[in-house]
Amino acid sequence: MEKREIKFRVWDGDKMNYTPRASMYLEFINDEFYLAESSQMSKVFMQFTGLKDRNGKEIWEGDYLRSRAGMVKEVVWGEGCWMWGGEPLNMSEGEMIPGYSEEWAEVVGNLYEGIIINSEKIG
Image 1 (cartoon, rainbow, N blue to C red):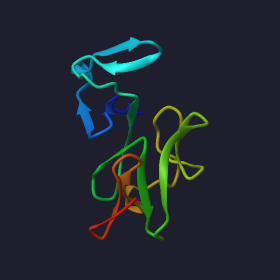
Image 2 (image 1 turned 45 degrees about the vertical axis):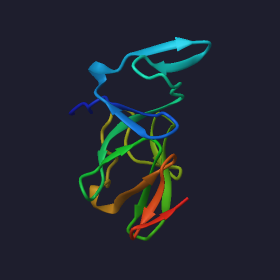
Image 3 (image 1 turned 90 degrees about the vertical axis):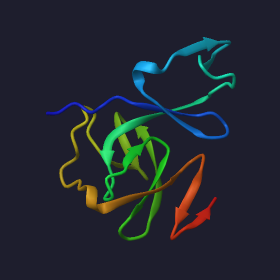
């Protein structure tokens, strides 16, 4: 079994920051996390799932995936694995669930930047 790469991204209120793990320095002040190199408080940290969509785009916590049937749901961590609308995307150790195929879904946006379908921003 191959272990997934551990990476994080941070929503700073204006844009998504993709920071290599080795260069991410966090400060914990008054029960809140801050990026040490940022003057703004960064409250929203999201982790890479280790999975990719049908276009080869990385799937992150907080992303919206659209299935081939057109259903759009958010990717969240729950019940020890990555979930999409209550359905597991992978097992707890990073293995893909039986029957998972990268061909079934496409990243169409995320919780903080909205959804883009057919070049039209929704949300």
